[in-house]
Image (cartoon, rainbow, N blue to C red; front, side, top):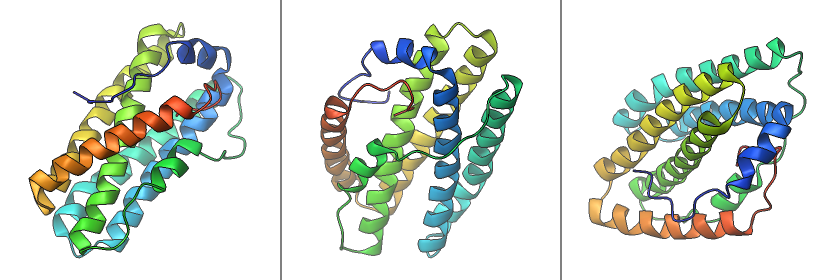
Length: 193
């Protein structure tokens, strides 16, 4: 369903479980950034009412996820700590095409966000399937379902606002680029991506 060209290295989940506090902290900030990204899209592309309608509830949902990750941190006696630079998102941002129509510009951001949601969904599935903590296992299952829905929403919206064939071609380019990003990133247990 996600069409990712390169799966996450299976060692990641074992490394992540050994660094649970770091993963939860990074995950919290990923949720915060997801909510902020949706807000930015709404503000910058408010002339697309379908975008505003679709993303407004996503903002609330992502912020709710942030709050839930904070609860898991507190339950385990862990603190939020400082945000970390997300090398994965930085690399994806470099692939965004500049210029073109407003619909083309928006499409680029929708596809980038779709990829982030797809990779998050895949990582949540790995955590759900392999992590020993039963409470977190259930939590990551719920988030896997949620992120899959967001992924679909971003892709479908891109196809609604711009030429479907062009979106599909560009989506393939994004998938190839993302695979290269994943291939070249160090496997780190302190990062969700």
